[in-house]
Length: 293
Image (cartoon, rainbow, N blue to C red; front, side, top):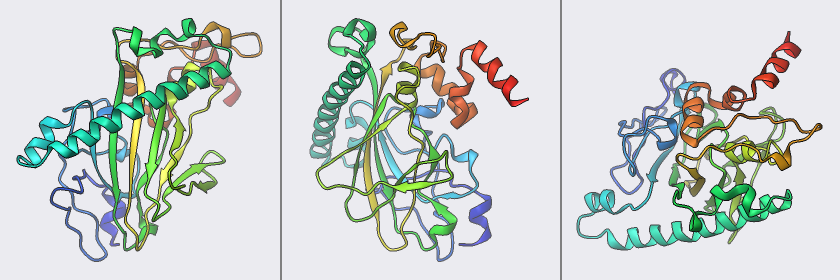
């Protein structure tokens, strides 16, 4: 890849089922910006193509294209395929329904393992809540890359959600998790018929750090095209979350201030992977700063 790649991160991506972004030997994907990521804090639409909210934090080219779905995809899909969109929409809506049910079951098990009852996490149970959770389905495509050393599928990051359910194609390994704050990367090989569950920042906050957010990245392959589907399950839009007092004691002080997902996304857009530090309780933040001096 030429020097342009290292100086200019990609400005966007387009879905794999529309016109492909052009490429040139030794060059970058050349994609036209259309929308910003919905969790970047600068959302301009509910469903469609977009660019990474954190692309400006990294110099490496993001060798990636994708399609974001929030709610029903009918409006956008009917524009892409006016005469043949029903099957795609039906599949996506059914998949989201199944992932929502699975997410809520998993979250219930995770909170129960910490000794929490339903009354401690009323915002989680959307069936009895007037404020439904925010969910996002992201369809990801990582084309074969002629020079993987100078490109990245997705740069190291944590998810902002409570949890993320990831389905990976079995033909190529791309997901890696950090075993040492970004100094050691461990491949997460796809298992046929299985999903990968990532703990996100909101779960880290809601459990006072007992379930830790997972730093991860996606690498690209020289010869193989990899695809994945990521389902992000978050909190209701206007609900502030904070660790239940059952998880707070002398040995486990309260770590984080109450925050909504929108407020946290605003912090994430500004501070990226340091956003959790930004919402720390003031006393802890001061103590951390003193230890650094």
